[in-house]
Image 1 (tube, helix red, strand yellow):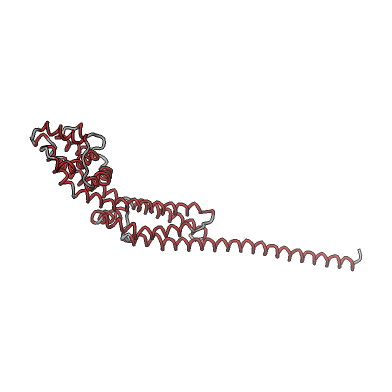
Image 2: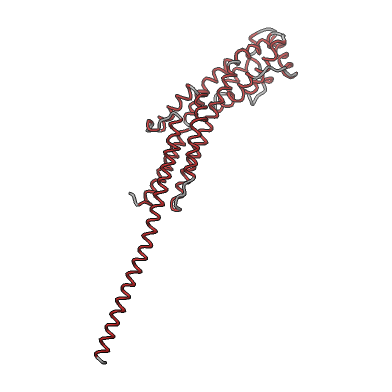
Length: 316
């Protein structure tokens, strides 16, 4: 082979190899750049998610507790939060229910909108969904608590009528005087509500007190809730003309008693007062535990979300 031609061929081969090498480098740089740009885009997206999450937390969840007069930083354990809620619920239930409804809940519900507006990457979207569910759960718990505390108002209004109504009831069982019947009728309906599974006409009048006492021995929070919110408001309702069934029942009791006080009901009011005292304590204790499970659920979900976000950001 001609030496000159061989030299040209060698030179051509070298140039081809150089060109191919340069092309390979350019392709590698391009591919690397593409993946780098994608990685940076993902990183920025995760940073944006984190910023939006922290904003929702600081503008909704944290100020909600402040508005509810419960500084989370002061409670290292759920039991401490429960004691704080119990103290408020026992002292000013109606005012606290109003505060939760009118001031605290709007803050929390605005915060829920912030959480729901976040679009988390598919890799940990479920963690964000858990946070949203936890905030929704807290919202539901607060709504229930606020509603029940506000209903204490109707209970206490009826409670002021308890003695007057029971006195009219007792008098109507002793004396045949129609003036007592309208108020006595309310008390009779009230007793029927308290003893929901029994008819007072079927109970010996002297046994009404013991029957009431038995009725509040189990499920004390439930007993208070039912009697306070359904039965006591009957006592503060307007007087009404009794129906014939009630008149006949009272007349039969009066005839049997024949003016003897020991043969009529004298202890139903005492039994109701005792039941209300102990069941209200149980009710308040139950109310005090309403918020701590919701708080724990949120903190657990938030921790899982932050852990997933940190992993996406490359943080340990």
